[in-house]
Length: 117
Image (cartoon, rainbow, N blue to C red; front, side, top):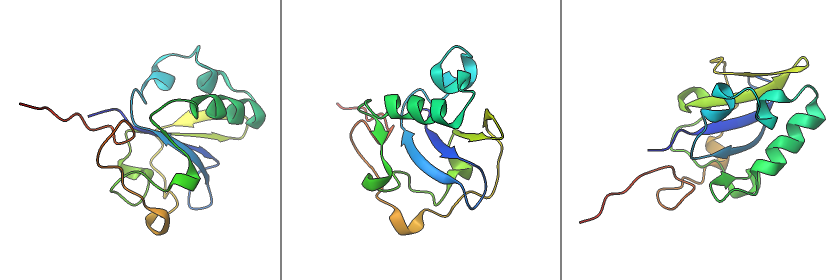
């Protein structure tokens, strides 16, 4: 399975979900040189997430919440920009995404590895 990540402006129930990736979600926490980790302003963070949106495994909000769980508490990494810095893995009460759920059970956006014969 992939290492999933969700991206937000703010934290908690009022956070604005910007999108999610299904693969290599750890890289932004492990590599401080990535544009996500280096963002010092909300605009820089938004631009970095916009760049991620070009990836095949990126899910935009208009595509619906891709995970079978209702919020980011079970996502491997939840990155958020707040108070002038990027943070992650802070287990908050994230927005309930049940009403926009569009679970990806196959393909690159799911993060599942399916083994064949």
